[in-house]
Length: 116
Image (cartoon, rainbow, N blue to C red; front, side, top):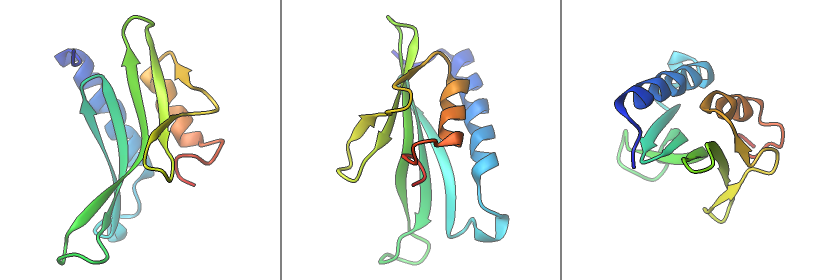
C-alpha cells in the first residue's frame, strides 16, 4: 500500500529539502546532481551523473540510500547499496522512527556507506 496523499506530500517536502542541501553548485548540476523518488512505501535517494559513454546529455542514476516504512512495526528500515548492487541494512541504524531521522543519518553518513 502506497503513502496517503498527505504523507506523500510531507515526504516529498522533506526529501526535496534534503536534496537541495546536498546538491552541488548550479554550475555543476548539468554534470552531477541528486534526486529522490517515492515508490510504494519507500523513499530512494540517488545521484544523477552524465553517462560517460552515452549520447550527449544522457544521464545515469546511482542509488545512495533507501528507507522503507514498515506499517506493522511503525518504523523505517534504512538501507545502503553495496558494490554488489544489492540493498543492505545500514549498520549504524538499521531502523529509525521517522523519515526525518533517516535524512539526518544519510546527511551524517557516519559509516561512509552512502557517500563513500
